[in-house]
Length: 131
Image 1 (tube, rainbow, N blue to C red):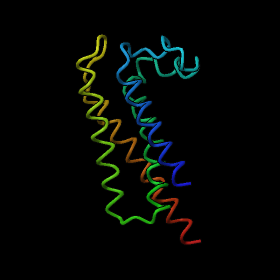
Image 2 (image 1 turned 120 degrees about the horizontal axis):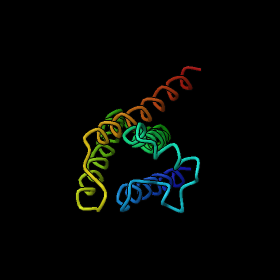
Image 3 (image 1 turned 60 degrees about the vertical axis):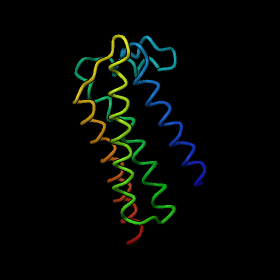
């Protein structure tokens, strides 16, 4: 199970980097994205918020790995900081892509998303431990 979680983390990292660095922010122009996701993600009001979604999943998967390996509490903070570093790197990389732009709100939403994913898994682990 641990290897599966590491695999999912790697796939998540690759997808985040890929979709952050494609030339156009419009997901409808990407053949890999289902139409219903592209329709929602390409709405102007969802442009920043959509950054949080993959980081929620990445935070949850990272949290599962921390719980499974019974790592020290410090790993919760380390995991969040590594995900913050990832969102910073992908946002800075957008400075070099056509039709893309650096946006501080994307960084904030990425930080919030990863924090919520980690917090959710922490709460679930505490609930399961107490039952």
